[in-house]
Image 1: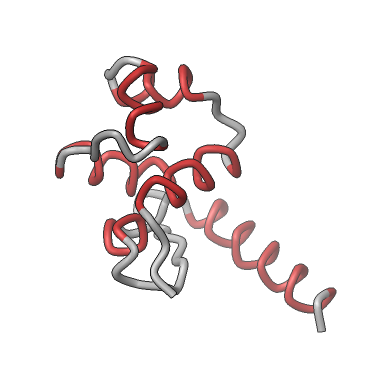
Image 2 (image 1 turned 180 degrees about the vertical axis):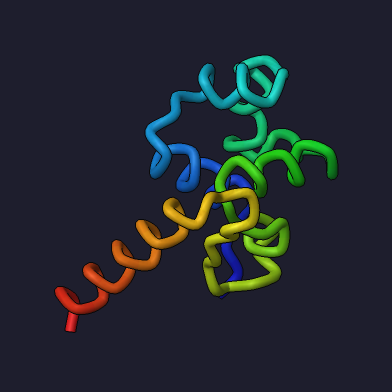
Length: 97
């Protein structure tokens, strides 16, 4: 199943606890731009797709719906932050079996 870019952006934004205005501020765009992306009125440029992938620690392919598997990109995290992510994923995996 292919997920729409609009749905993915909204889901990633909400999962990070950001409002449209907060995401817009981080990207240097207007809230109306973020709203337009989420309403499928327009699409983000390549520049903003890359910035969102970095912000959400995922791939542009995931945001575009080309890769159905969500990934967490750990590049740029400290070793301690990476260990926390791994431990959290392991903890959640064990509780969902």
